[in-house]
Length: 351
Image (cartoon, rainbow, N blue to C red; front, side, top):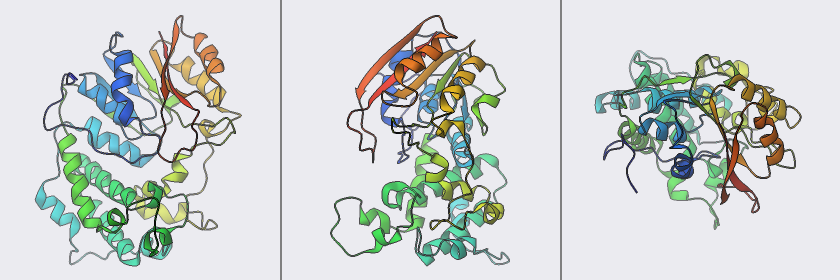
């Protein structure tokens, strides 16, 4: 395979365990859009940043956006950032306890026996406090990226959707997961993901930006918009990323986290926020409004063949604003944890 224009031996996209990530599909997606005439692109539901990163590799001006703050920091670290890395001295500073600092114990008090051990919770309290002392915004983003990835990899199912620390700690035969991975110290994983993030940094000669907002509020004009919204199954069950990753989101407003916790939930999720993208009765209208907002741009949608709205309904919506719409099937692609063996991956392209 020919390497993308700006790819080199050092810069490479980090590994990811994020629900619904398109990291393994970026080559296929690029093959479908590479001949389209565009210089700037918006990844409107950026997630891991895998598609945005590939577009950055191809020399495009990339705008990353995600409504979740921790994801927007990933975008800042990997897409907007052109040259900043975390040096070894800074990493050591982040990993050590410092005299004169009173370390909070919010995570220790709020999440005992839910996701991590008491010692691990104390480590996270200390490390996120040290991270907030960083003054350089790109260094802060890189450090948050490394901490979030360390938190994910030590979780059964890589999610925060239930209170299940016992799954990690039980001395039983397992048919899934990797206890060695779970039990490796946080500090080891943090260093590992700092290295991965540092290796992903490169300059593609463009002014790329990361945003944290509703896609409908995005202020710029772009040649192409890539849309990969939360998936709602035919049964009406939505993938709610804010609920799945609420712990990581809380890290990004650490000092205000307590006020936003739903203490009625066993796993201490964030208070619920309504979104049309996770509501089967509102998502079609949300697509319509987004297509109308970007009617002057090339519109590319990643979709599942059994989602709500259905494929034909989504094509009909797109045809309201684009004179030519084509549907490119990838075929069956099974996401991690998905039990749906019949869903196919689609790319809708409106020009």
